[in-house]
Length: 299
Image (tube, rainbow, N blue to C red):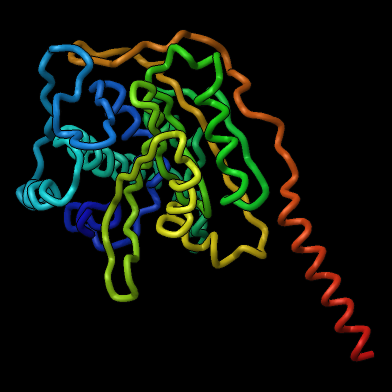
């Protein structure tokens, strides 16, 4: 998307936004309440499973945002309804973040960048606890080699077989993105509201990517290059990521049209026991061996 369609630029904003976790929760809420189906291609077709026609919930956007919305439509292969949810989530997420920061600032150091970021439980609370975290895991190890099994676990779990969509928030390097599994087409969608550096002198805005679950390896490799490029730059450094699975628990509004209503169950255990990243350990051992050998030569 163009640079203007991002959490740090939308509505004339020109300062970094640290609201990505809150925005991911709000985007999940818009997708769920409006029953937005995510399709692999040509998403502009009817975006509901039934025959009832659904209209996007357009806010009273300023003319600048409407212009940005119109500019984004021709170059994105997604429905106006999904793009509308994407933009509304950024607007409301930034607003909620600012409101929550007003509460934090009296007790936090203004120089502490961590004070600007929110954990998933904090983001859920800031958004009114409409969703709940049914399971989460923090994994220490190389992301490119370890992420796949922890995305497949919720998708393949019998405990979520009644969920037509599965909502997961992935946090890497203190940045959050939303991953949605669409059961009907067996595909996983990545929705990221940050700006991205496409080339050395060219930035782009938010992005939406997808792949069939059978090609999940390709999406992960693409994500490591384009969404979290630090991963490839820090292959020999400690890496970690967090995956959280969310489920709706709030009250439905009269004009909501969700695709499904999840069973009201307690916290589930969806993820496998974390395995040690053998590849990372072996590389570190080899480095230590080389270092020891070098020292022996110079001694």
